[in-house]
Image (cartoon, rainbow, N blue to C red; front, side):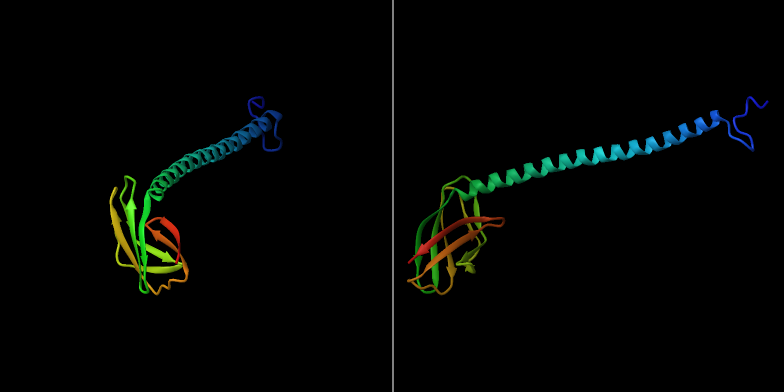
Length: 153
């Protein structure tokens, strides 16, 4: 009967000790495999998210680059209280001007200006302007700068 039992109350036989070590080793390796699998899945999902984010940023930059290159200043007049610009859209996308800066100060536009493709539209800023100064003008759309230029009177 003693040949069948691996452990008695007083001593542990070598076969039983070997089995216990094997069981402990299997438990540890399965949790290590689980952690390794979680790390691999996290890295893979991070790579997929990074690829998606880069493609969206590239698409947005391509669309903004298209709008940056198509808006032209056709004429410009300046007096004491107004800076009036006639803008021509030479591209194929609608450009909305929602705000502006004149020499790093917020310019009060008469309203939101929509310049249709192939058309000309007027925008005006209110302020105190002198003819002996130079001004830097930036016109803004909802997401970025549409047009930036310098005026020297």
